[in-house]
Length: 239
Image (tube, rainbow, N blue to C red; front, side):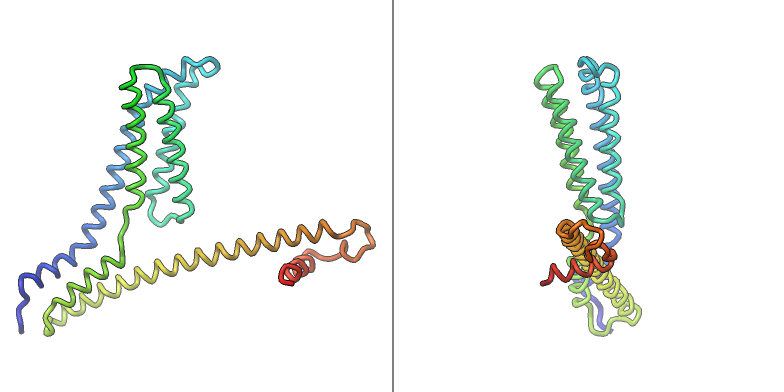
């Protein structure tokens, strides 16, 4: 049996370590992002609250408003970092997080005090938001992982042990399954979006039909069932 060269061994071991390294990086990104955002919110809280509480009509609520905004930012952060969450929910949470971060940065800059301090507090919020955006993009690239694994498999000798061959096959199947699952999820989301668009179109056509129908009790259009109206509306839309 041929022995593997150092390059072949390195490629094989590198392919084995892809998944553990990715999982470790994802966990570390989520943990560190939460710590960074939480620290920034804690640092800037007093700066905002001290100024807001001096504004006429706000008073003691000035200490509550920044806390509400900070808690909302942390909640949005949790939604974005939750695995398996629907993409529309994550995109919405990220957009709300950006809006809240802009509000917090604006208050920090508008608060009275030394210009340097105001700039620093505002910049901290912007940095926290930027870190959050980058962390939200962290995730496995299944195509790249499969390509790396395929290269490692191609470097192995032809007479590789049966155990190694079975392990390679399992990893290749798992990578293919991941790609198929992602494509299936994307196709399902596209189908749901198209179905909702069709429902909205039929609703608009039905509304037009009802607006055009006479209101006299004896008119045939007023005694149509809801199903008949929906069918008629669909027919009108296609004609």
